Length: 262
Ligand SMILES: Nc1ncnc2c1ncn2[C@@H]1O[C@H](COP(=O)(O)OP(=O)(O)O)[C@@H](O)[C@H]1O
Ligand SMILES: [Mg+2]
Image: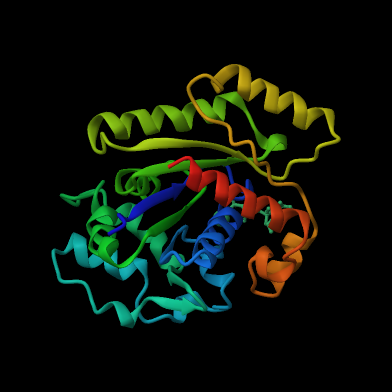
């Protein structure tokens, strides 16, 4: 029997391709017959909305309610009451209400492992659970880092600062030391890459020089394409929307490289 892997897609910078990577890595793995659950852990609910849920706040049960149940030491509702399915991908949705959890967790006994308590219950049902993190290093992200087996860091060259990356790594090390000793960093996935610009190349060299020896930088890089925005407007992964396009091909190659890395 294959074991479930929980992957956190994390970077406290917004707009670096976390949600896009969650969707397309998830889609690629599901296409290969893997059972995949995507977890929306960003109160902005971009992941939930990208599957056509226009009003996440109207969903009766979301991640907020599940986390609240754990905090209050109650049973979780039945899975069919909140898991959304689109083709062969399952989604655990959230809404803006999830933002309140940051405060509610402060005095909770299980404040760092509330999400873990939920996701561990799903392990028997999936090969991969992918958590789309929010752009901050608050309690929700700490919960994601504590709940996962592996962390994938998408980074866009134009927004990449060595300082930002260092802050993220410091938080990961702290979580590893205190809460989740088995967690591993998968590596950095360069997104929104433009081959031609000098900046992209310089940044990649910079990361290689600073972190290359102890953090993997995936060979596959995700190029920039306007098609990504069009796919979002059509509620589709880029792999469905433009299967032969450069971004779809890059994500498929990345999924292969990612699996080979296991
Ligand atoms: N490879 C790409 N090329 C062009 N636009 C992209 C690409 N990847 C993501 N985007 C767009 O950039 C914005 C931010 O991406 P997103 O995945 O939402 O980042 P995050 O989740 O880190 O905030 C979105 O509008 C998305 O459609
Ligand atoms: Mg996002």
